[in-house]
Amino acid sequence: MKVKAKVGTCQNMCPETEYKNRPINAFECDLNGKFQPKLAIKEYHRSDQGRQIREKDLRPLPVLLKTLDHILNYVIGQKTNTSPETSEIQMYYFVRDRLRIIRSEDITVQNLDGPGVIRILETSCLFFIWAGTRFNMENREIFDYKQNVEQITQSLLSLTDLYDKYFEETHQHYPSEPFFRSLDLITYFIYPGFMVKLLSFSDEIRNSNYIQAVLEIRKAILTRDISLFLSILDHVPVQMASYILQRSKIIWEDIGYALRVSFSKRPFPKTFLTDFMRIPNELINTWSKSFVLSKSQDQNYFTYDVKSSLKTSLLPDVIVPDSFRLIQKFNNPNEFLSMDEATSSFSIKDFVAPKTDFTNDDNQTMPIIQNKEDNSNNETKKATAQPAAPLTQTKEAENENLGEESFQQLAVHQKEESIQEESTNQENTPMSPPEPDVPMMM
Image 1 (tube, helix red, strand yellow):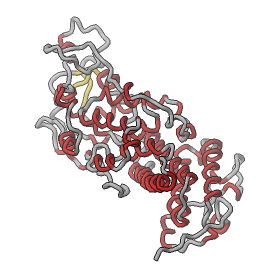
Image 2 (tube, helix red, strand yellow):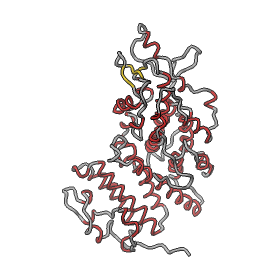
Image 3 (spheres, helix red, strand yellow):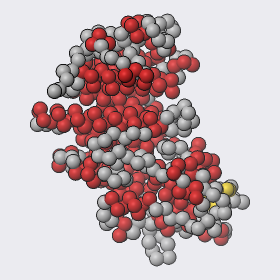
Image 4 (cartoon, helix red, strand yellow):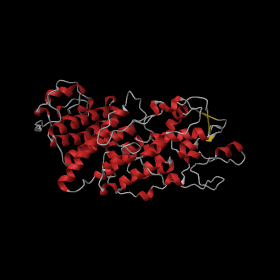
């Protein structure tokens, strides 16, 4: 027998009985720092999971939408960074908990659906995607990346059900559905379950530019085509690029291993990391420690200490190129949460890897950045211009079947015998995604 959903009667963003019995958050105060009951927002408590939920504590959909607008316009738009207690990371903690209680309690217990609920969950999903790249360099005790990913996948799972129900009722796809379906697919894109998820979409969704972009980015990762990978990031909406970065640390690690193999006995230019791979400047030192790099006599060149063990666990969960942080929509969370860019059109014809006129002895074009200095009289520097062989995309790789077997090939790093156990440490292994239609539990 189906239990009848409760109907919330609370007309405020927070029940009075709650804010009177808990500490007041700085974001619930006015711009002068004084608490205002009308600014209080119902909070999430893990310890509350077993409590009885009363209708007078549940907020109906209009109040939930009012709460969302308040979070966007006041909490994020006005209050953030007005005091030490309202820093950006503190804002994240506050908004995270307030969005969690909306999804896990108010929406779920009342069994709410429709466009209003879709808007709330889409905004929640984008907020956690923004946070995943914004705080990627924070200490893991300050920012829990795994918990943040769980919020993304839970939001996407709920949206999947809402989009299906909307289509059943209207026989039309919700306008923003292709974009968020593509985000859902990104969660799986180099793991088992990708093809099952892809084939669960309708032809209209599969043929959208967003899904085609995910297919292209997956191809770039499986073939280790960093140039194509970065080209795609430059053209897709910033929200999609942000989530792609959170799910693709493996491409940087794989190329890091390949470089270590290819340049184990000779120096290579720093520009290979900064210009070609776009390793962020703030991460160069950590990258050097992770792959045991040291500067050669020429400070613009690196050499590998192949006798030392790798420490790739030092790398952050998400690698964000410096150029990405210059994007206006990335720096302004409210702009990031706007769907204007996400619904704009773009063409997969733009996803073309930059060409280079550098060729090897077999007249094959190689994806490598040459040193800007004059190398004509330096034999050592001439040697560094030789490419890392694993980065060459062969014709067979281009036509490779991108099925689940491809991931197994990708996961086997090309390493020389001197690379120790650290390279296969569980800390370096990509997180296992959820099985289809099951939320990721991190």
